[in-house]
Image (cartoon, rainbow, N blue to C red):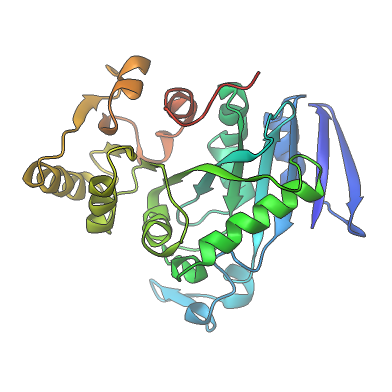
Length: 305
């Protein structure tokens, strides 16, 4: 494992951590471009991320292009962002973000301004981006689709936080929220079904391509579960969104549907199942502040003091 502390947007202190000096040009760009003076950003490496995995031991072919295991299915990075004034004594709330196709954790954090949005939301929680298929057109969730692997990933994130003295040795996971863009739907559904950790909220950013039955069953399983689906006309999720609302109608589960331009923060807080239609392009729906608004207006994450 390795890490860096961001003192301000112009200075990065690279530290030795467990004897390894961590340096990443992309990570430096993230820090300089998005970080605030009151956050710690670092990477850990976990054997409980999606890859390596036997399902992609020989890589993956898409549109007659081979995406090799060595280049695209061998990265076990987890990018972690913790507010400097995090108050986590017995429990710490966790938000996991999963990226979509042709992306990686560092690039997604920059492209969608996730660190900026998370920090200015002032939530008393930790944001973790676990690597999946790196820079490949692939939704396969690898090991994270298997029983109990996500639970082990949560433990690894907690151990990383403890090693940095961000949380105390006895601190456990509190509320867990999942968020993701585009092809992230599959790994998120796998975690809900097999992750062996209770998930409190799911935020899909134009990502409802399939696994609708898993998301629907999870919504029905607990009246406290919160689900937000932000969808577009041309991102490929429109038909599946309509199919899901029909399933909820048939199950007599109430939900609200709004236009993105019309929704108010109070409506995020008032309704546990939301379908938000956006006129933006597929790759523009996370920015500039949709992730922040969802974080700020939910019932699970408290404001940092």
